[in-house]
Amino acid sequence: MRKNTSAPSRALRSLGLGGVVVLLAASCGAEDAPASEPQDGVETDLLIVTSIDVYADLATEVVGDTAEVQALVDNPAVDPHSYEATPQDRLVVNQADVIIANGGGYDSFITLLASAAEADDSVYQLIDGENHQSHEWDGSYENEHIWYDLEYMSAFVTEFGEYMGELVPENAELYTENAQALAGEINELDERNRAIEAEGMSYLATEAVSGFLLQDAGFEDLTELQFLSAVEHGDDVSPRLYQQALNVATGDEIDLLAYNPQTETNQSARIRQAAEDSGVSVLEFSETFPDGIDSYTEWMSENISTVEALVEDLRG
Image 1 (tube, rainbow, N blue to C red):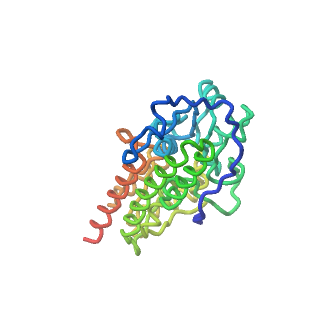
Image 2: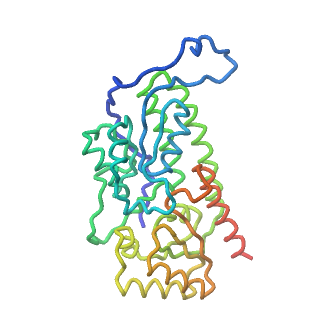
Image 3: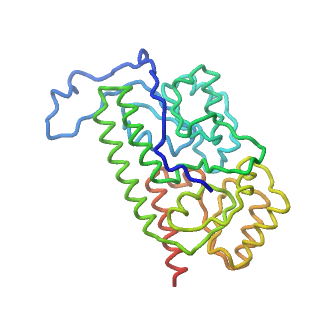
């Protein structure tokens, strides 16, 4: 599995500011605020729409209360891979000033909505290229679940702060400070995850979502890339690949089965059962925030804690 370790790229396009209404009252002007107190941002009527709740939370951490942020997918029972946009989604995207898409074929529903609204220039896409996937196996697979790549997310929030600062210069300092603080928190999580040092341990995954996190922790991925590709397309894997996964799950090759409950199929459920029957540890990793979690850093911290505990237990 190849990992894109470069910083997320984005085209800085001119997003027309004619619709931005500054609501700051004179009493809130920077010149009236004590120098020793933090400055509130200039409130705008900007609407930022994201494909999933992960990016909504990160965007909110950067812009604070200065803009409205909405996610199209924020239900842990929904699989974003197969999400179908609703009429309400179309309305929201039509009104958006900034549209955040993951790209890589993960959330094509939001870029299709943006194109229909003639709002392609408002799209901030993390993975370059067309946001679609081919259903034909071409011998390669790229993991698009980049929000599990902490180094990548740190770079993203830093760049997004700069991007929003260019869009709303009045808030550039605030956005930069917020982005840097958030990037620092994510960097600390990244250091903590890499310090797990699970070298010599391996895992099988029923879906690729946790790949970056586990591999940065030192685990080796023994999942066939063609298996992961089929799962990403929502297809049942071939009998050969399914049997191969069962063999790995029930053998002595892996220390962990990484399981995504949001993309559960009959095949993945049987693989999980086989692993559990063989005494293999199973950890769940979801696509979006699980119930009770609404913060990216809290979510990733809990994921890392779970992995830390498992590795400590495996080392005895």
